[in-house]
Length: 248
Image (cartoon, rainbow, N blue to C red; front, top):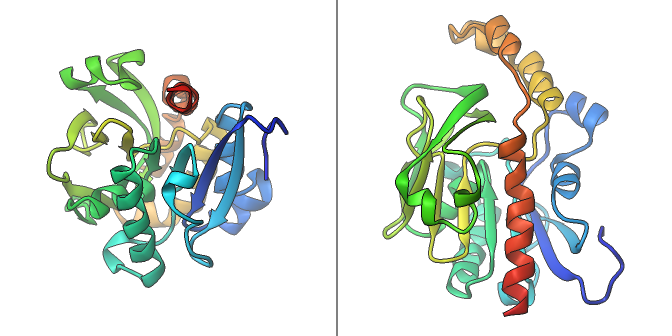
């Protein structure tokens, strides 16, 4: 449990869908620690590992929901993941502010009727430029970000088809579905707002042999890593959305 200790703090659950590489965890902590660092200290955060336990209560018991990345694959439809997808669908129906990141982004799309599978061109990793579409100009979160900004990325699976009615917000050269919104309060982002440049470099170090085997320029990817402050701002913007939504 993390938070301010204020009984009026907005209760937010982080659905943890897996763990990072052991060597990265030893150095930087795990996924939930990175989100805890990036979200507002005004939120009362609870972490639930949904690979080991059911999602907690009904989504409407919470004022906000964050779904982490994972080494798992949504297309495998593991029982814990399908159970989480059902819960996520209930969250969207209940209009609870929700942010899904990487696996969470794909899980949201799957839960709402989109298609998730391996990207036909393989892996995307490193610091890449995200470009926002015109629809982002009226989005509660993305309207506060620049039209183009760097972001940290690492994934093999993608949202191949958006859910019905989803609003596409951003793309990269490699990935056409970098960000989308479903309804008024549920967002999915393929990029990692919780990653620092140091974490991104640590991922590339671990992935180096696989990147070389896949014909990617591992050294070039490492050299091109840069800070991604605007992508990281998304966690604070989402926090502010929760705080405003809870007051209405």
